[in-house]
Image (cartoon, rainbow, N blue to C red; front, side, top):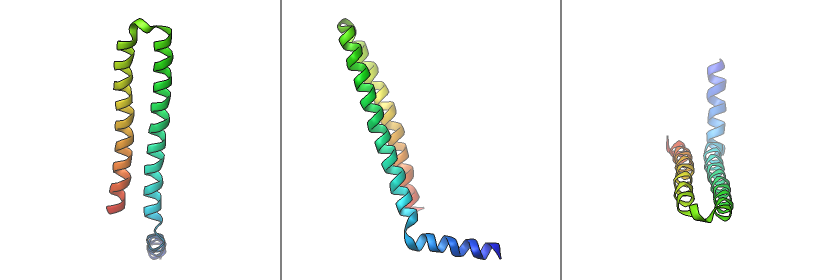
Length: 87
């Protein structure tokens, strides 16, 4: 009895397209989070370079590595959300 009710509920969700909307929402949240994170990284790096201009090379290289890590996590989130559309 419960299995039949759950199957009907899952069918209703699929017919409304809520699964695709949820995947798109997850991908957009991952992209927004990456944008905010990279913005904060850039702001902190510019502030650090303004304080110590002589160490701008080290700060810039560290900023690029950290931004790549943030972008990698966001890309992973987007890929998972896109794959959830097809699986």
